[in-house]
Amino acid sequence: MQKGYYIAAFCLILMARDFFTMDDFDLSGRTVLLRVDINSPVDPATGQLLNDARIREHLTTIRELRLSKVVLLAHQSRPGKDDFTTLEAHAERIAALLGRPVRYVSSLFGRPAIEAIGAMAVGDVVVLENTRFYAEEEALADTKLEKMAKTHIVQRLAPHAEYFILDAFAAAHRAQPSLVGFCDVLPSLAGRVMERELTMLTQAVQDPERPKVAHLGGVKADDSIAVARHMLEKNIVDTVLTSGGVANIFLDASGVDPGEPTTEFMRREVDDYDAIQTECKEVLRKFSKRILLPTDVVLNDDGGRKPVSVDALPAKLLVYDIGLDTIAHYADVIHQAKTIFFNGPAGVFELEPFSVGTRELLTAVAESDGLSVVGGGHTVAAVERFGLQDRIDHVSTGGGALINFLAGRELPLVTALQHSYKKFSKGGSKA
Image (tube, rainbow, N blue to C red; front, side, top):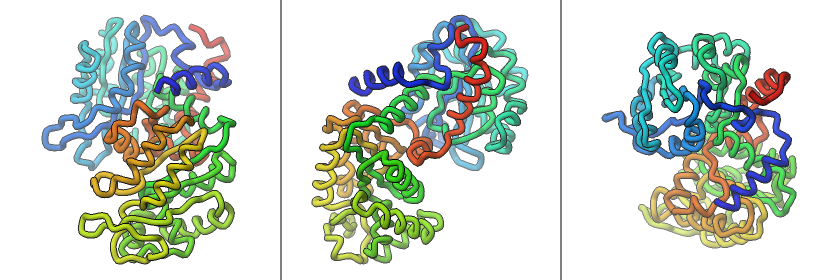
């Protein structure tokens, strides 16, 4: 992690930023609205948090604001889900991690919220209610930034703050009022999580050292195909390694039938499977020498590993992992890489017999001397399960946000920060 930290710091100095960071303003004594992504697993029976990883990611930002008045905005789940609940437990966990009181207010922009903000002293942290409890957060999503700036949440809260800090990289691919609306009415800064993510990802994409490799696995094959296409077309990487569901659909597109059970599973998981398969064929036609497919896979034979060559497919059993020959080949490619992107597990790593591919490839990433960037919910869970988080340069908090970044798509939160920079930098960035 030290290597990644210094690379990030050096890169930030060199990179021509077009957004504010917390270094651009004196925030002492100021009231700041801090939008984070602390969406966490919750036990629906007790309302208790099952994991506080996302909360811990934001502690650096919160601690740096110890001389400010911090009004924290966040969401938890979405309407209709079992874990759609208040942020009371989150506030309690933040307090425990900080070692000081944190006040939870069961209001977002009503009188209790406004009065709580008005009563704050320097060093106080207040957590307002789940932003998605309010209809306009979802109803006005993806509308124009200026329209979101006129919502109740923005119009009621903005007058009581001097700055807006956007630290929710994991939601960077979303456009909702609490995420981007304040960027039109307040100087808006990237928090430390957002800054670190953008710095490290930009560094990894722009690093001129070769070779550069991307591993794409998991079952969200539609997004991964877009990433593969973009990264190969723009020459961001030299080689794409495929595994998991991504490999299954690429194999199918290449003329190798994985077997009815696996194909039917993929059709359930991937929207518009036939269109995605057609796109895979096009990507393979253009970049066949730069996309590596498994040469052997592991089937789930009543809970046990059954290795078979790809030449032996189709199979009547589900594909659950990549085989040892594929692991050895992919690991060798990873070891030689100067930059590695890793998104998605190689198999059903949650089941020990089928964790081999994911564990061995991530271990190769950890052992590599190249700059390593891994991300995605399941990938991060695997990294933590195998105890490799301290040996990887950058473990991204983003799943969808990371995929969208790597696919070359616009990230609304970055666009909003750039908008605020242009609007509020005319009079100088220091305050």
